Length: 325
Image 1 (tube, rainbow, N blue to C red):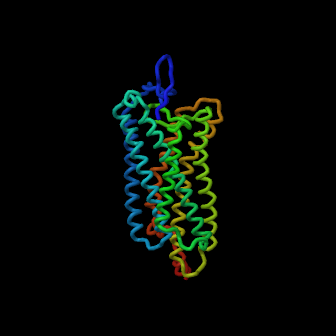
Image 2: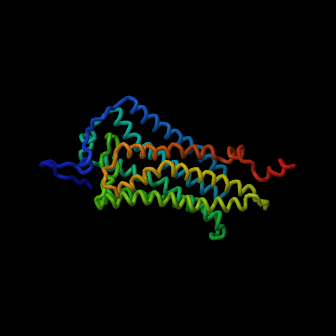
Image 3: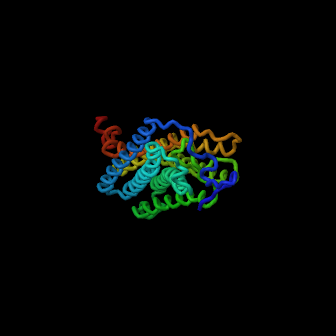
């Protein structure tokens, strides 16, 4: 769906109606190197994390842990594809200095990148909330289901999250809001404004993200409190509790990093929808880059928090009596 506005007897595609390239921007070599190194580091980290998770998945015999690893694999795949899709466009812009309006006169590429930014932005937040729900039920309501979440159900949940995020990303293309070129001309994002349609989509994006983080915080807090109550009990299930602690440590770190990286952008978008001031492109670009750091930090959580490494830092309960004696 391509929309346009008429100005001075000329038809301007809507994605260029606010910011019309080319912009007066100094394309430095540092910009290209920064984008390439940033994308390369993120892609290699996520690829390494995926290999680590697959090996851990093959070794595990715990159904709850295999389901959790399925969620983590879905998160790694999402982060990898997000960096691959958006990074390829940004790096190409800084290397070739192409004029986006000449390359994409009908806004197809701009709409695609805008959809990608929304989709790959919401997916990690929604997956983090889904994992928090799964761990909350597994730890606090162990008898509420006949068995732990199966791998097929975990995979179905990941697919459902992708569908939900995909539907939200399609809303501007269908008329609820719009995707626009953003300065310095290397990326597209939805328009943050006070017009009813733009305001509605801005609220949807920011509130869905903030609600996902709030759900993760509340449920993870309750799950941690429950684990602390039983972590010292000697009931012959130390191994199982080790897995529970390992999964919660990873989930807590995922939540903390996602909150640090995403809250500034989500709150800035939420505040901008009610402000009469024009969105500052420098602030928006800075907050977006901070949010993108989440895709680089996440995989190292999976790599460093595997059980074999965790035990070197946190002694397990069945080692404690030996040390006390």
